[in-house]
Length: 120
Image (tube, rainbow, N blue to C red):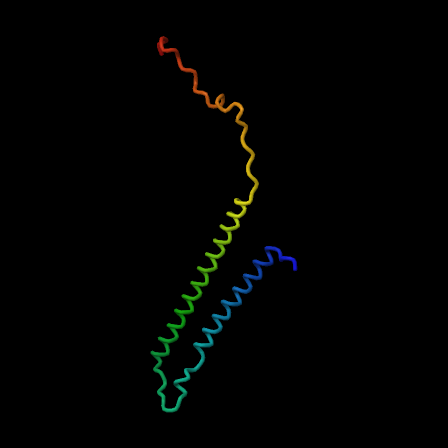
């Protein structure tokens, strides 16, 4: 099977990453909206509104930190990928041709100095 062009790979990876982030967000929203199973048990007291707000805030913080970690991971993967491609390109390139060395010393000659008996 022929390999897909690089642009198609990027597009597919971006789509998969967005689907994953969307699933994480949808799961966290559903977890917030879902009633607490302990509150529906017979004889159990329902959590106070303050406790519910604390739980919701904790879930929001976890979702935010998770999104931040996913973003850091994505940026670091892209940076490593770019660096590794550059390194591979440099490693596999053809060696450069040597510079002509027939008259190197003529190119780097010091300027003519005045004779020691002549005054400056």
